[in-house]
Length: 78
Image 1 (cartoon, rainbow, N blue to C red):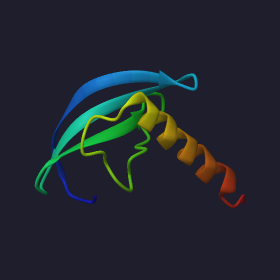
Image 2: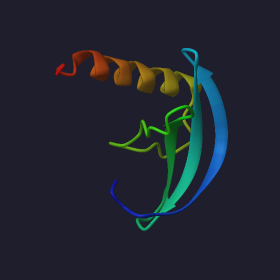
Image 3: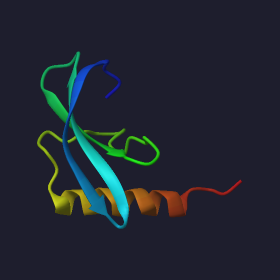
Image 4: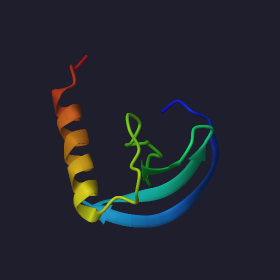
């Protein structure tokens, strides 16, 4: 990623594991479109490493959130 976002549009809102997530379609300086997933409460971008090429399915959202939770659980504590 790292390309400048030129425009974005909300394409869906989903509740998974009691949290609300926004799926947005973004246009960047790079060719093609990207679908990003954002935590509604915090504004945290979950697809920071890699966006989806197509709107994510509910199963893909579950997988993304499970990976995010594992990452938080494995992070070193101060």
